[in-house]
Length: 99
Image 1 (tube, rainbow, N blue to C red):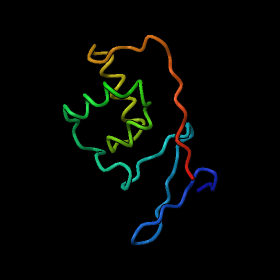
Image 2: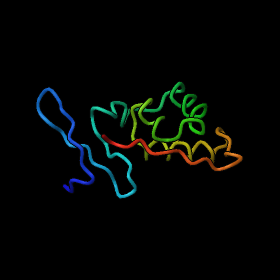
Image 3: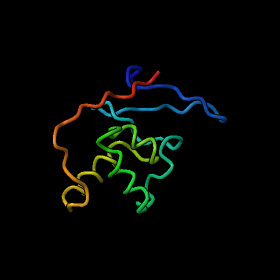
């Protein structure tokens, strides 16, 4: 692992590295993404629709307990189906930087 893309997270049993993809998105980590591979609930989808443009994909992913890629993919699917409106103007959200 490259030290530039890895942050150590302390757990009760030791350390588990947090890794990022080449776009700077956090890869799956069991401590931060407990809902990964669980079906989307109606409440999760409503939260995604209401907060995606306002908070950005990273903040929504932490709130829902899913990876950033999963949240972005679901938003794209909802927009294609017409359940989520397309943004009027593109908003740039700042990345949450690891400490």
